[in-house]
Structures are given as structure tokens and as C-alpha cells.
Image (cartoon, rainbow, N blue to C red; front, side, top):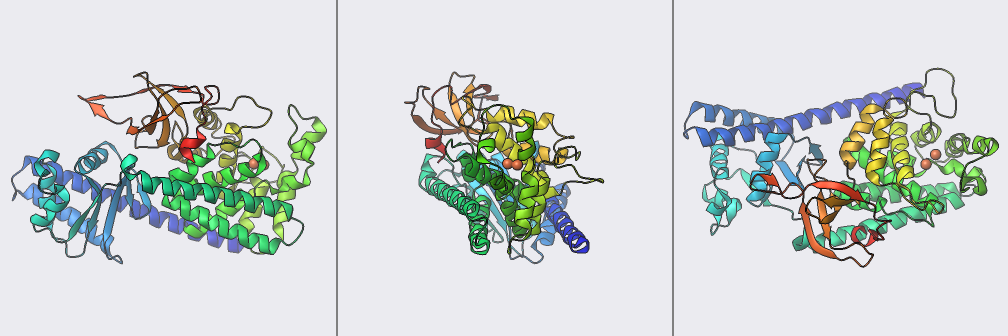
Length: 477
Ligand SMILES: [Fe+2]
Ligand SMILES: [Fe+2]
């Protein structure tokens, strides 16, 4: 088993590095494109600087084209994607992306046969004002007129009311997936001592759908985790934890089958609680020492329950056992020797903690706002949580996670709907009042918007939606 595990860890490491290499190459391509665009505005068409930078990019694209029919980049809400990989964006890349978005371009596809002069033509076109293209069908049609054959531009995927239909549909699907997952966990919990094989099959299917859904639109399902349910807390907690864990797995570019195993592990992490009396699990207020000892057994109970379920990855058992162990192994259950949490356990324990911190429980009148929970995770990196994982988690979820209600310096307020490249400047849905009868204004805007070189709106604080009597569910579900 030790060999088997180190093998699979070795493979995971290899595929992780392969992905990182791909991300780096994709990033280099975009940086080179930005260099060409800059050079095209400074030097004449046949200048060696311009030609050299175009040749460099052509080489990078050719490398990326090995084993591919085309090399496609997409820009979605200020994020850059190469295939399904998220590419980190710095200031200069963000600027180039804005230039594309301003011209209505949301995707660039390079095809085999690409020549350097085509790249220079694109760069020259890029340097025109968006108004230059009015009446010519925009930059997208302009490249055809220029005779650029080995490149295709795609339109921006608008995430606003114009594309409302498509987005609403995505969200509806997300909430169905969420409900399916709750039902599956419920059934699994009820049947834990009975026929687990069938239940596990259903669980795997549900998790697969969750993974597909999150790969499709991470924000839609993550938005749902900010809606807390009072009545079905335990189930909702497991499902939310799974959504967050799967999201982090996709963010870290894990393989799809690894992400699915991680999802199952996260859904099942607290299964051991079925062997702890309900009165103790749901007890409001402080537990007695005896009760606390019972609660602390749930990782062991969980690992035991999962140890002999056919069709469930052993990693689910490991994650159940280790999810309260902490990064320094000073959590519970106590173990001898130098235990280091498996990365799956690190992810599950982070997702679990964030979920629990922001959860609404029957006996808490006030729920912790997501940004405060993020601050707590940051404060606990090192001893409790793996620091690298915390960093990735915070980058993914944002300083103002989806569902956070923000106070803006214009006197307006907005509900966070998507993250952008700037953690302090998400896309928000503008709301018009705070008494529970509020209406969405229909405007989803980005806090990255500027006017005359200054940001139009800046966050000045956070409004607690529960205290303000706002039901954020209607906007996110
Ligand atoms: Fe737990
Ligand atoms: Fe938990």
C-alpha cells in the first residue's frame, strides 16, 4: 500500500509539474503578444525588434501546438484561461486583456501554419482605438480583411443582463446539482450501515456532476455555498465543503479523476458523526469534557466506516481521519510519529473550517461574514493550515467572496458575483435598498471600471446581509 501510494503521489506530482509548465508557456505566449503590441506602436513594420518579438511568439505557439489542433486562450471576467487552466495575470497582461475586451474580443485561437507577419498585423490592429473598427464589424472581422488566416478571434462572453439567459440557466443547474448532492449525502448517512455499494455509486455520480459543473462555472456553485441552510445544516455543510474542496482542486489544476476523489472525500469527511449522539452534535453552547471526547472520535469513526466501502477511494478514509489533525499534527486524533496531512486532508480541512466559520446554525443569531472567515484562515496558516493551501484558497475565493455585500464609496452597495484579477475589486450586482424589499438594479458592474484614470467605485466596508434583512439567496440561486 505504501508503494502504491508513493506511486500515485509521484504521478500526481508529475502531472502537477506538467501543468505548471503548460501554464508558464501559455503565460509566456501572452507576454510575448503584449511585447509585440507595444513594439508595433513604437517601431515601423519591418523593424528587426518587431520581427524578433513576432518570431519568438510564433515559436512559443508552435511548441504549444505540438499534440494540439489549435492553441486557444479565453478571457473571462478578467481571468485568462488556456484550455481549462487558469493563467496568472500581472499588470501588463491585464492591460493587454483589457485592450482585447474593449474591442469585444474574449478569445484568441492560433492555428498551425501561423506566420510572424500575421502576429504583427494583429498587433497593429490592436493599437487602434475601438472606434476605429465601428462600421467594420470590429476587430474580429478586421483580421479577416487583413488576410490573417491562422488566427481566429472570439467574442467576449458577457456576464451581464445581455447574457442573462445563459447565466440564469447555468445557475439553475447549479442549484439542482446542490440539491442532488444534499439528497445523496442524506441517503448515504441514512444507509451507512446498510447497502453502501449502491449508495456509493450514486455518490460518485453526484460528485462527477459537481466536478463538471464547477469546471464549467466555478462561480455559480461557489455562490450557492454562501447560502446557508438552518434546517439541513449537516448535509449542507458536507455539500458546501465538497464544493469548496472541488473548486480548490480545479484551481490547483488537479486531474479530473483526482478532483472527483477529492469531492467524495470532502462529502464524506464528517460521516463519522453518525456514530456520535445527535444531541451532542447539535448541542448549543459549550460541550462538557465527556461530550467533547465523543465529538473528537468522529474522524476515527469516519475512517472506520469508509475503510470497507467498495468503490470509495482510500483517500476518503485518509481525509476523514486527518481533517482535524492540523498542519502541525497537534490537532486530533493524536497520532504517534511525524504525521503530515495528505494534500487532500489539507484541502478538506480548509474547506471544512471556512464552511463552519461562515455557517448559519440554529443557535447563532449572527453569521460570520465571509471576509472575516478569510482573515481567520490567514491568521491560522502554519500551525493549523498549510500556508500554501491557504494562499491558494484565498486567491480563489477572494478577499470578498461571492455573496459578500459591499458598501461602496459612492453610497451604493453591491453583492459580489465574480472575482476579478484584483482581489479588492470584484464584479458586483448593484442593489438599491436594504430592508428586505430591495430590488436588484439589474446592473452587474466591475469595480475595476475607471473614469478619467480613477476607479469609479471602491469598497469602503461590508454590510451584514442578515442584519440588514436581505435575502441574498434570490440573487445567487
Ligand atoms: Fe469534522
Ligand atoms: Fe466538517
